[in-house]
Image (cartoon, rainbow, N blue to C red; front, side, top):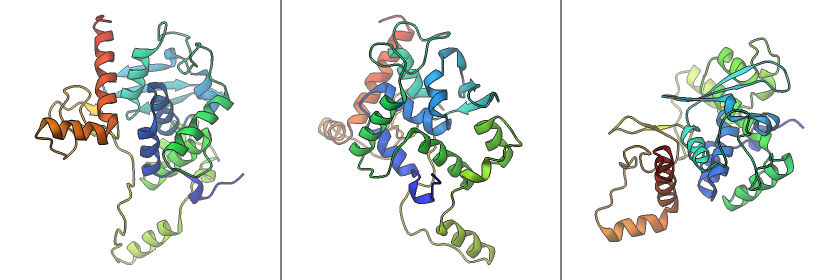
Length: 263
């Protein structure tokens, strides 16, 4: 079924789903589906050996369905996947699958679908959610962000000559209005506070690259938001209002202790 722009997820809806997650693996799964534009088959067969962590994030090398190798640069997903790797049993390496269920078995399509729908419902999203809608949304967002067509084709299909590109270019009437008005030198007013793109957040203190929706730096613990908390009461209230802050700090501390062999 052909999708229209209204079927796609907005950056704000992706953020809402991330905040609605209660499990480390779910956060990694959603950000991988979105940022990497991975097909469900790629997610289901992805191994730790397919992933290389470096100072910028993660490089994913996948070769599924089309037999066209894809080189995918991941930045936003890095810390979420690092947290999941720290919790992974027994050993996140080699040919072991990245995404597994509680019994260590491969995640099947139906399970992923059900989980995504549950998270979307918790986040207040009423759209029809499937794993593939993240890929559609990501490619369309990259086009709107003016990422070069050749880069999108190579990253999403592994083929600069693919004819699938136009299938994923979902632009809205607002996009057309904006382009045409700007072509005549007419400034376009921003009438809402919607987020136009998801971006990693670089810590101004230690320069660590943190994923979207981060309130505190994963490395140095400094605040990444403009919210200032001056009292213990303020801290308690902030944690109450934003439970993700506490969960993020706990997950990062556990991951750090495991890296150091303390757990």
